[in-house]
Length: 83
Image (cartoon, rainbow, N blue to C red; front, side, top):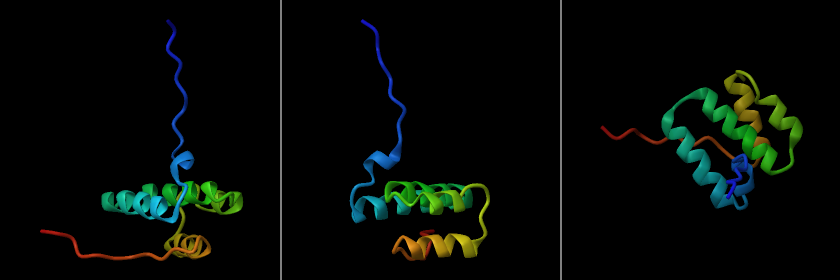
């Protein structure tokens, strides 16, 4: 029996606002700006906003990340780290 693999794409699982918020919160916990930018690109693709997805490729500035988040109807939310 041959095992078939499909490429995992998180976009297939970002169906609701709650899914998107949970995904972005999980990515933000790591604190890696590149991962956050990539996650915003994933959300843009999930919402069929291909130009926004292209805008966050590479190493976008904070201003670009904030503009993309705003265009997606999101806001950046800061919480204190637990020590």
